[in-house]
Amino acid sequence: MDKLLITGGRPIDGTIRISGAKNAALPILAATLLTKEPVTLRNLPHLNDITTMIELLVCMGVEVLINEDMSVQINAGTLKDCTAPYSLVKTMRASILVLGPLLAHFGEANVSLPGGCAIGSRPVDLHLRGMEALGAHIVMEDGYIKARRDARLTGNSYFFDTVSVTGTENVLMAAVLADGETVIENAAREPEVVDLAKCLVAMGAKIDGIGTDTLRVTGVETLHGCDYKVLPDRIEAGTYLVAGAVSGGRVMLKDVDPKSMDAVLAKLREAGAKIVTTDDTILLDMEGRRPKAVDVTTAPYPAFPTDMQAQFTVLNAVAEGTGTVEETIFENRFMHIQELHRMGAQAIIKGNTVVIQGVERLHAAPVMATDLRASASLVLAALVADGETLVDRIYHIDRGYECIEEKLQQLGASIKRVAG
Ligand SMILES: CC(=O)N[C@H]1[C@@H](OP(=O)(O)OP(=O)(O)OC[C@H]2O[C@@H](n3ccc(=O)[nH]c3=O)[C@H](O)[C@@H]2O)O[C@H](CO)[C@@H](O)[C@@H]1O
Ligand SMILES: C=C(OP(=O)(O)O)C(=O)O
Image (tube, rainbow, N blue to C red; front, side):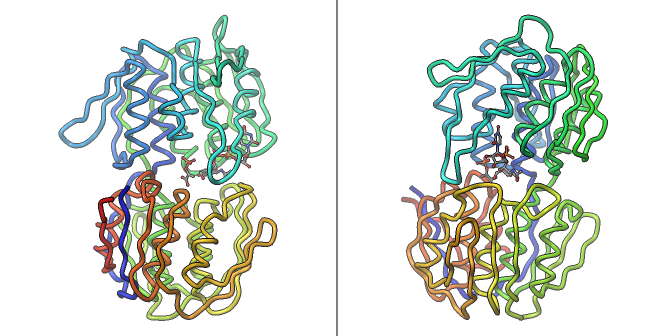
């Protein structure tokens, strides 16, 4: 298993390009199942999760071509099997996103139940209820969700009890081919949901209210191919900005979407960062200062994202003062705290909140990555720790950060991959 070896204390100063968003690319890849025509996707990040989703499409019989310009062309017209097997779903929860498109377009879907993971239980009951509201018949058999429809799905109103990102995406993808109007209430408004909706519109879907909590979908009989560029990854961008903030450094990001990052940029400013944005760049400069502790509470967009929680825990761990990080989305997303303790962080978990007293220096220690963003937080801690930190189990990081060591090297960090 590969590891990352990081020597802390190097000044962080440089410019990097932000990749396409994993959490937009995955539902958009699933959406290609909604048409028999080829769909060309641009700005897909080179990540293990993207490879897994492509493998999933290929194992169903979908044709995938990589063009010379690195765009990917997907043709679901060749689909033969509506099954998402356990062997692939277990490695990536986002596989559940093929449920809505398969059911709506091909009339059936057999998708392995994704189950829990390191950050919490992550149920999919709201996805299933949404599909049932559109007329789907769903049973659980041998660990699989077996969904089918007798006739075309029928538009209906569906209210999400809890704001769910993948739930909204799944029900939206089912509704675009349903007969009549579907109103999805209490819909997630995350930029990645918006990006999926824009791609669906480019495929011929009729959706009103994009970016609001009420999506009105007028079903169409068929969708067509399109050429679509995935939006920049706001979580990757936020992670590199925190690298600048914790190190007193300067980070310039290109090909980024600052408008999708208001909550994170506001907290970085509160921590003392000078931030200048244009339409597609962000410059963060700490001018050598240590960050000030901040209080954050995770909640659905436009509030502070759960996927930036672990990184801000590290910011507070080296900040002046005491900060709190409250997690309201997942019940068990503090796995990084135990590892950060090993590096000298002063953090106490009280229920769903971590209280962190900043220290002047962290120190290197061998640490273990437990999930994607926890892993990123350990890398951030290592950048500012005294000595050499070895981060183990980095396959989690490779799910979500394209070329992390190359990008951090461009920012001046001392980091290398050690084959294990
Ligand atoms: C609202 C939110 O911030 N969602 C995050 C969630 O999306 P993801 O789509 O994985 O999770 P959801 O948005 O669906 O979950 C939000 C909440 O709803 C609950 N729930 C969800 C579906 C369901 O059928 N039943 C149910 O009870 C979940 O347990 C959770 O407490 O994790 C992703 C990966 O970290 C993040 O990118 C998303 O920002
Ligand atoms: C946890 C994440 O991804 P996933 O939902 O695919 O597990 C994430 O993007 O932070």
